[in-house]
Image (cartoon, rainbow, N blue to C red; front, top):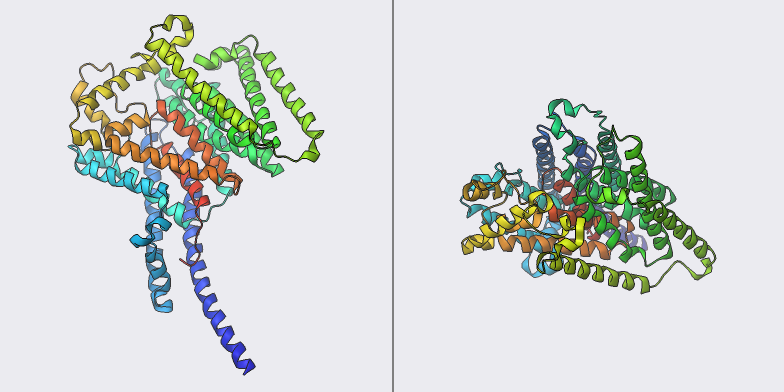
Length: 545
């Protein structure tokens, strides 16, 4: 009896193990496929090019959609085979568990706010495309920058595939930083006009300084560096691994050089977001405070180094302009940098004398910094009001070029923003709600205001305004909720999985500079990929399904 009972128990455990082994095997196979394509996108995509900058947008677009379509196709075929095997061996138990998650009564448990908002966003994209007067162009985005329904659908599909079926690993961020360092290195050499890839041989000389590295236009290049810098700096701030501290610090230093030498104004917004929001996490610990001071001191040192480089190699480098030039030429910069390093050393000495009190710093500094951020926002709002509404622009001197929002603001961004809102005011109600279809802005400007445009505008040079014009108010709201909820969810999980802070601040930096930049299948795929990785780290995967 005893032996029989043990035998029965063994068989029961074996049945359970068989079921778990099957689920884990299926999960491992799908995970391996997704990991391969993530590796491909992280490592190869940023460096992919063919014929200099002439076809770089098309090449990267084709490489991205090719990878995603192949990944989805392989996962679909494998999943179909797994369902057949499950039906034959386990009477479809795993399939039933999987599909039960899709039952309406389980939606609240299955889908997060982020999931729901991106689904709504995609539905709006579909409706916007089918009601558009330019269906073909809206689907493919061929009259814009290829950001039509097809590409946006791949973004959404890859988001669900990665966030739901991939087991997050921090090594992918190391891979991202490795390829990012290569991009930064090439960009830095381009600042010295070395042209190590000989890209300049195939473009006009007047464009040499506005195209760089393996990315393209300097605005897009600095947007990509914003992603790299967001990962490196934020991860440096929280990691406890000594080797990774050094690795992330070196990447951060290179990122500082690269984003400044990129000579694009959108870098200011990315850096402001990085330095502005990072203390809300770092100031909770003494280690975080020390590393933030080190970060600021290092940034100041990098600016000073670039100032020295510009003086020593004035005939070889591109040179800085705008705010970076003002900062580099500031006579007191050296003293500020020395002061920052002194502050860093002083805080380190003080911490060593208080080691027995632990590493926690409390919430006082965090709340204090939040107050500083609020006051800063209010101050900027006041300056904008004073310069534009009150008519006191002259009192701000050189800062007026940033404060006065006229047509010339931001290299004529002010003009196209104003015309965009004028065009929107004339839209039919259905188009105000759903737009004219993804990436159709260029068609609108050519058909409506072609005669008065100083140049052809295919994009609003503001990602949020672009979605507002092409997918309507509904599309913009859904997109913003998607981004906001994703960042919030990742932020809340940083203490459990510190490495995802890199994803969080990559998103914050990128989407802050997006207010003055365009969405291209050069940088946007990386933003969606990092968002998906961050969400995969937040989701608890059930190995049984």
